[in-house]
Image (tube, rainbow over all chains, first blue to last red; front, side, top):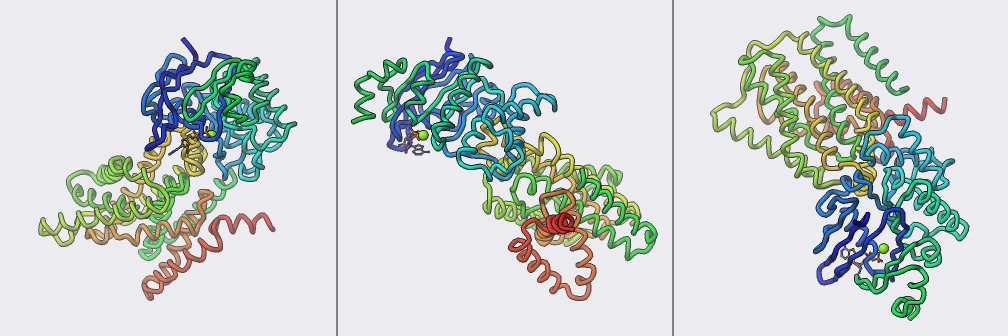
Length: 239
Length: 300
Ligand SMILES: Nc1ncnc2c1ncn2[C@@H]1O[C@H](COP(=O)(O)OP(=O)(O)O)[C@@H](O)[C@H]1O
Ligand SMILES: [Mg+2]
């Protein structure tokens, strides 16, 4: 059975089908790319998976547990955490405190004080914020806050991390550094990622497989090369 | 750790100053008042300073404690009545907490105020239906006993507030204050933690209400659930500062002393001063006396 199994998920907002019968499987250890124009339903899919939005139909199974109906905090403790496209730092807390909360509450098992300090440290280093731990999160630049989003998700000890346009706002050097970091986390810690990105180049480089959504529906699925040569994707993206 | 040392010092100073005067009814009265407001403001901070859910209805817990105590007093030992008062206030918070904590910001402020007023009117109705227009209590414990219990509650509330702030629980509450959705996303069980904080902040005010009732040996619903109690708590805590545990102590001591000076001679002036100070602090000293002292301390 797949690590993350999304079965026929639909989400209706009033008259709008934000997601229409979306099915996909993410395997453990892979980097799964999610593409689609603005309003395609990518963020909504993350919200459904993470428990912030109840699907109109369908269900989500993660690591053998049915997530549908569980609270986001339960889902996080099961090992699945998302970031927010529009960042949501704990603005009045320091960067390190942001991560400490995630370490204290995010993991399934209760960590010792030392383990927590270590998790915080590792998360800071992973996103290159090691020298910013003492700053208030509000003092970070947007790029810093995007990286804090990633670090906070990592600090929960999640096995599957969903990143929602975290590279937007990063300059090309920062993007390639972030790609290295994510690749390393996958190989060293066996983390699984589902990534939404507008920087298509980054997505193509990083992803093992890519799913393309359009108006809430799957229109293409495959390896980066297959997606690059796909007719309908070209239509949607390049007109 | 530094602010904790400060608390100990303030507490010691207050009691040290008070001890020689125990026996003087006037000073015992002042210390009783100061301890009472510290206990109330500190309890309030367990919910409101940590989560940012500003309760304007803490009089309801004080009132519930007083009411339970008046119903039980004479029937069970005094200590048990106190425990029952605290327990009932906590239980009441647990029952109403779920729906009340669903709203936040100004809605929470108004809802807690409205709830407190609602309960006040219900109790007033019940009492008048029973043909009771205020109940006298006989056979109350000695003033010294009540005083030491109240001082004990002030210390307990301060230690409790300190412990919460420096615990895993407190870290979760701070995350809730900053961003509830993000907190939930990184594993903080938001609903449960908010409810626990609400219950924790209700218990001691219940016992405080019982002690205050025994001190006056007279129960009257309009007084026991007086919304001025809620206003005073909020003002003290905000003026003192909500960033550290010493804030509510500074605010409570300051206002209790101010009220001693003004209340007996010029009660209207006291309310005006209370209101004006609150406005001035919210506008110009958002971190309260505690923040002000901290700044002066650092500058020197
Ligand atoms: N809470 C909501 N209420 C109503 N409509 C929403 C809500 N969230 C998203 N939508 C709509 O659903 C569609 C998909 O949005 P979203 O998932 O944010 O797209 P993407 O992340 O792919 O850009 C959009 O048309 C958006 O306006
Ligand atoms: Mg989006």
